[in-house]
Image: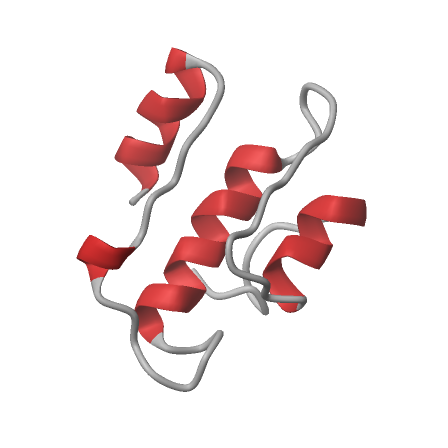
Length: 77
């Protein structure tokens, strides 16, 4: 799923995708799209869309606050 065809994100969740900073932190309220933003960013990094060169999967760390979000990340990636 690319950012162009993916879900609609707003605010900090959208900024995390298009203003790549390392490390990136997304902090927002419940239901705001934090997990979706992390998944989209990982997809963009792994595919090379974010940097022009694919990222080594072993170089990524996606950390969430809840077990539910972690399980969701594992499922989507």
